Image 1: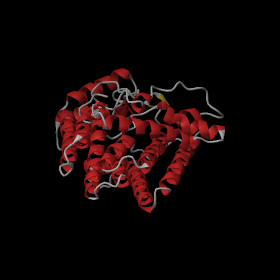
Image 2 (image 1 turned 30 degrees about the vertical axis):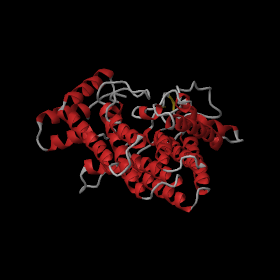
Image 3 (image 1 turned 90 degrees about the vertical axis):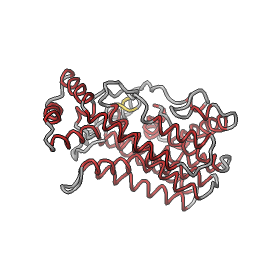
Length: 367
């Protein structure tokens, strides 16, 4: 994510790409060999485990069908991120929440495909906005084909998602449209930054609620709807998704300054070097404005020249040891705790346990 309003719109390349070695993908998830952190209870359940992994395999197959294109360039660009892999967290949440009702309904898998396609579409756009060189261990689409092709590919994938969601009916279409509106507003507000009269931390929390929380919330809600689950569950799943999505992004912020190389290939401190606003730095600016000398000194380093690896390592180490990093973890864990609290009315069982474990897992990781 970025707050910069200036972006490069020049092409990084022309024509069809060189072959790109894809990053390890989530085929293991689809075949039941592995599930993301926090979902171990699913794999251990003799009925739910096979049902979820079977449907994840169906989602994976339908994702590839949805993005296939007779045009060679459109087909290559659309397949780029799907084949790079990913945790498939959003469709997994759709499938899991469907087990609050009748998860065997075919609409459930289609809804799971819709949320993942929508997510993929936003990644193409985000990577252009952020000038990100890598995504999921592979070069980003704009690095291979240029900004314009990457943006149009994101639009194309969203169009495919819209076709699928239109087949699910007007209510699903409304949920997706409102979610996409929030995704766009979140990116817009992030790009222009907070107003002069707006608290930067509150602005940032609002941005990530829109950019991350909204689609996570829609994922669980759609699963419950198309499984015919009790309508009383929908609002609490939306609240859970919003809060766990924010917790996830806040944890990512802290991970960037912990000095651990993340699985995406992003080195520690990348956000610092690129001037991307994250919670620890926003809290540091707050403390510096309040007269904290240690915050002021560290902020001078962070706002200075971080082009050398040595300077970046010094900034990362300083921020890692500063109290704002622990404060950021506390805030992330508070959002996680609130997500768990939202689940209280759900019946006890593996669905509730898995959602609870996932909320804990997103703030208990190092990459």
